[in-house]
Image 1 (cartoon, rainbow, N blue to C red):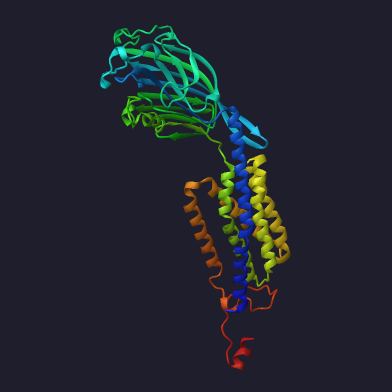
Image 2: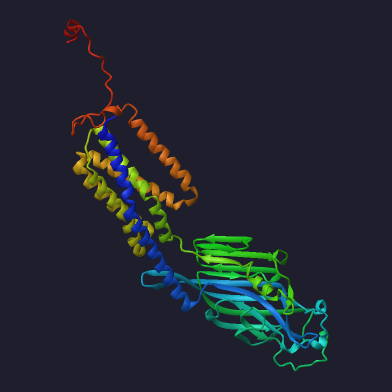
Length: 465
């Protein structure tokens, strides 16, 4: 095989390696724009309300232990039903879009009569009049309106930002604000019934996501929203869900047997703080995702950049060896730069018109540019149009791969196998030893001749003529 063939293939390989440099800068640019988008999200969330997590309610009753030290006993509910209506909205920081929401939360359920017998606490040691109910929220700034709170049918004021249950911050309510302290009271006259019902309705702001903690023996959560692109998150998936273009409905039912924390604890226990912290371990909920995250898709598309450049170079190389052309390495390099700029065009257009229109526009611009440029060194309009068609096919193929992440490996592998088979089919009769030996510009294929070898008999040759 001629040395010119080895030099040519080596030069093409070197150009592919060198094109990693601009692709690296483009990848850094995409990452920087993604970080700016995340910063815009944090800025809006800091003023509107971050992702919300709702814990509880937790019933807290203070008491004095045998040493006369004030302690707190915490109890979880027997049943908990939560209904959340989420209304999504879009907010903008410059050109960056952030999904926020307004949520109307309705919580109801029951508590049993508090039982201190496990800790050998007598009724006179318990401060029944200071019993409180706490709902944990990780973003109090998002609270907008507290419509109602009732305990056994009686209203009670909710106060935000109080730490009544150890380790739990949020909304707190004194259950018996008008009750006088009575050290002689027993559990029957403590104000608690065998089944104590509560009902809470409040509105809050949040961004992107909302989660709930299963802090009951039986927790039921129903969420509805007009947002058509939910992503269910956390330790539990909904038992029922319906997703349509008009929105979604989801319902969770979680049993208390699956949690890793007890239904009651007190501050005397060594792991009391851990018990409070574990309330958030099993959180579940929904995230309002954008249907197309063009930053993620752009980052993934850059990973295929070298592959599409290599395939384009392979297309030009096939024209060289089949049509006896000479394409200068600088022409390869300029085509490689134009393909690299595709990804910069893609991210810049995506921020304004969306990923799919940006992909089509950027791909069309690169295909037209390379087709026009290839006409100058491929020698014919037919060859340049073939190049444009092949390049369009590559862009279409890689867009499909980007949209089907789960099938990207099988689709990519199958496509490469097909391309390899096509190259092998086109070159199966090629005399590789004669590649680049013919004079430049010769427009005949370098196939082996099927004509019979000339005979040594001059008379026979004359007769054939």
